[in-house]
Length: 138
Image 1 (cartoon, rainbow, N blue to C red):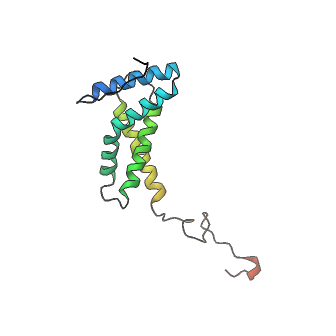
Image 2: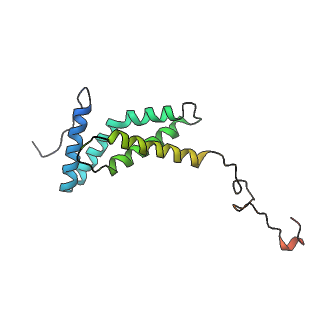
């Protein structure tokens, strides 16, 4: 064989995920960027259905479900890149937390704000300062 890692998925998925994680761990140690990229991509595709399912259940009536799906994908990618444990035990929980955090961050950044500073012309402090040139009038 040419030294390339071949990734196949089994019907259950868990056995192949374990093999991909093991190969990823070896690629990190051996510092093989191409192999790393392929394995990270394969793991991302493996866990993508979980991320999309979480996005749909997090905001079932979302105005922009694609935006929630993208936020979930970012969380999944961050989890895969951050996972360094030798065992895959707990990765689903770890990824779930990262995905949920990203979905919450997305909601915080996109929902309308009901606080001072969110209204155009009103500073974040909420205090409107009179223009001295207007003689003290606003």
